[in-house]
Image (cartoon, rainbow, N blue to C red; front, side, top):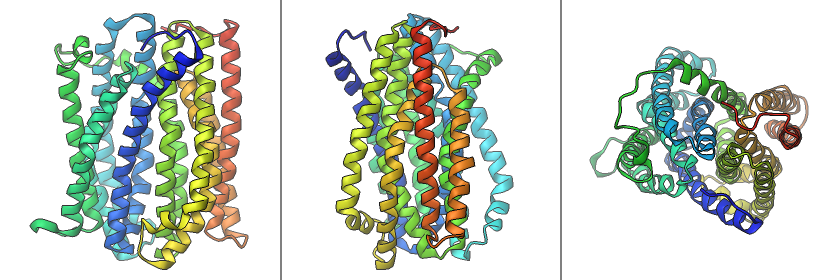
Length: 456
């Protein structure tokens, strides 16, 4: 990365950082897409089972990964301040923390998974697929969290094309392993939806190992000597990471968990409705990769400018990123209106599931526009290391507004299952407005020198 003097230069640097992140996020999302899509073509029960498994795993994975991506604003600000000597040590501490978090996840999951599934009252086949899908995924937890740290380090240096390359290498591997284990091709066991969990776990190991090789051997990463020196655990560095990472993780968790909660609350509906809901959520999640990619790009660029004490440039990047996300969300809305039936047909051959999915996709138009504002705004706030208010605002918007409104609408009106999506639309809109207000407040304080630009 480098300082920029004009808006045109900012556009170019923004695009250089953003486009590889977008490709990477779409590729990572495509793994879940192919898990869902290929399981759905095996049977509606396998699609529903994977849907339940994904709904339980995604909030945990994204929330805990959110803690680890605190590496991004920390490294970006160190880079902006010219403190390159501190970066390698910080990354190693992130890897140690990732190992601890992964171990805790596996241990807690082993004790609590079956009781949680038992409490949902699922059909036998759906419960079995969800249980063994998550059991298979457990083998990929350590490399997934380790890769999150290494990817955050690489991206913070502006080397987003490298993480894009790593992910693109792994995507066809994921599809191929799914092909083998879901359908039992080439003599492999026919596992149905469970096979998609196997495919994801193996793919996470491949991603992690490739990232280690790149970080150790490839420039500019090798210059930070991450794996050339042995560093023990530093509780002080962990505290610094957690101070920024925990609010990020909880904010991310609140957002993703509300979608998971809706899916779990909808488990009382029939398998076709669950399958259609999950198909629509999966496609909406794919579209969500656009604002989440802009969010990550803004964290890097705003963090770099804040570290270098260029407040005006940081503000310009914020406007550029949020504006781009809104425009792209409107284009996505047009796609959903015009090609809704074709999109629904990607997930199932069952006409009833296709019809229901198409209806859910109409509701998705509204909340993905709110996402286009809220998510990049959070990225800019992370660049300023202003993370605690976002944690509070997302909790209120998603859990005190979205979920109650959804429950009331679904159970006390004629909307039925669609009522939960109305709740999501309401909560996400509130979140977008309040987070944008917080960003304006932070930028004004920084411009006046009220907040420290160069926190230790």
